[in-house]
Picture 1 (cartoon, rainbow, N blue to C red):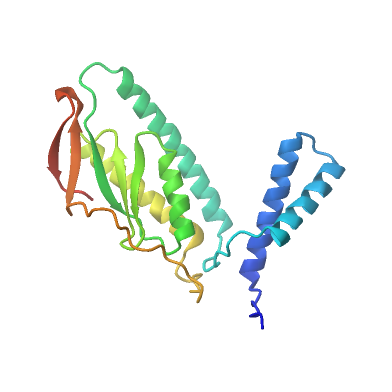
Picture 2: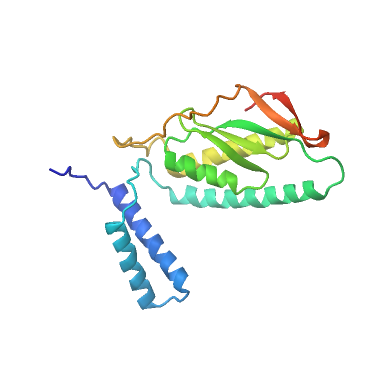
Length: 216
């Protein structure tokens, strides 16, 4: 006998939002905003959701519209600010910036929220996530400029702020309802990196690697 799935209001809301998003993508593909295109998009989106469903992702938090809008604004701000900084670093006189791989906590409960946060960090110039520890809830980020304590502290604050923005938008403690279907990715099987160390690469000396104390 097939197990009955209780339709929670949050799950229903998530499915409706996904259907509307697919219909919106359909209208964008056709390039014309007409009644027939919108109706066709809704029909196609509904068919995709019914006959080609994606793996179920438990909805355990609650989307806060105001906090989500602020999240989008701040990510856009960080993208613009990081672009200006990287552009200046590429044309300023002097040696190239010293880069390093740093570890940062990303204590989001949902793997879905964690994936969104990692994508947000990746689209910000100046750093890219090279590894995610889904059990320890850490991300390893290759940072372009770690030559000064000020640069490291600035990037640390930015990453911590992105984490806080996602928590306030999707995972507030008062909104969190753990699901029995909660999924956590298996432990990372990659070789363990030494704790509290960040490997920095000195480009000015032909790529010589050195150890730098204090990953954050």
